[in-house]
Image (cartoon, rainbow, N blue to C red; front, side, top):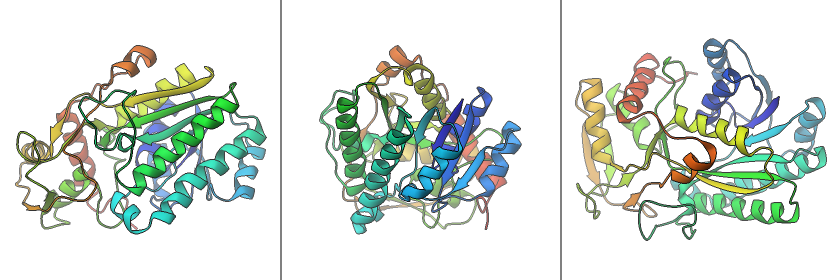
Length: 337
């Protein structure tokens, strides 16, 4: 079974490709490499023994997309391709709407022409905005506090409307919380270009000596230690969530929505102290003013995904931090140039 994986050389996409291969699927990877590197394919092959089909191109290029569907018999699509930096989205909103929203619409139009009716979309907990309470259930109100989150919410609404008009389609929206960790082999991990936007890659780069200290945005939130609380989920658990959605929902018409998280909130300082224990070195940090758009607490109620998909996060905080440190210490410069 061929599964088109857009953004398949990215952080979550690459780990999902490995899990797909190990379960007998054949990923066909499409990526424009704007935030990833081709060497990831070598690492996927090292881990899985299989080199996925790779076609470099942009999902906003209609002719390119058509050529992929013409050449390969695609059974289902897992759609990761998208820009994801909250700060950049505030500075360059049109870039995010063009890439994330227009790109998805063109992908769905091409799928429709090719008669491929199964889509799993990489959404985000940012669609819940600033939640009134935690843990967050799938039926909570949605809103967005930044253009990145708004682009995800726009895509969700477009896909809901499309599925309503095309009831034989299966569209699954996976709202995931804060992906962290790396493959246990130490061969694959998160390698952000430029300054990391997420906490753990920044901490890891401080630990390995690439950066002097961590900036923690806000220490006056109404949380136990004043720093923001998030639901950190191991990237391999997240990849397994996509596999579960593919196996359970690909042939179930409808719009299906699932939170993928652990159900446990950890503060920024919890993560810093855990990393110091694993890496056996101090992580210098300084407090900075809150960032616009950040919320105090955000963690999932993942019980619906367990009930319907049979999926549950298995890897705890130690695994998240140990695997991140193994990746970063083995690859101090990420995937290199």
